[in-house]
Image 1 (tube, one colour):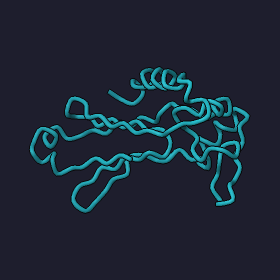
Image 2: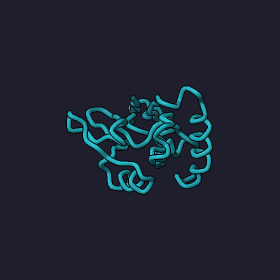
Image 3: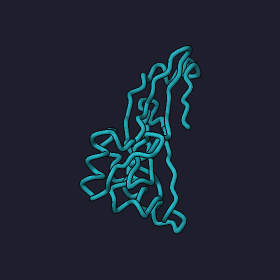
Image 4: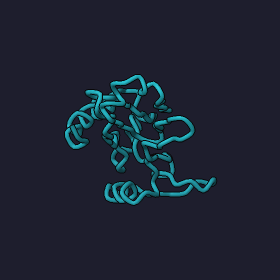
Length: 143
């Protein structure tokens, strides 16, 4: 399976979560990691929740924060008539409010291009490693 086959599922889930009454002016970020068929690691994330794959003394960052200064994120916000401003701490914000361009909730900013649609990445995992006891040497961190 690839990331494009996960798009309809992730879109439907993001629309469902965003209908909650609590999501109008508040929101959250999220990261979900799933090992599928012992051969794939699917990572979906929204906002600045991160996932790292660690082994011994090295870590591989699996996600990139959805910040307004990223070209694709900024372009979507501007295309939806949102604007990027800078806080007094020098951080970019969508309409002067939100530091992330993707979130679950924050319904008042959806019309400005903030979306709950996650980025989905699929990594192949060696079947021999996943099936063996060596798999225990890996740690997946998400926060």
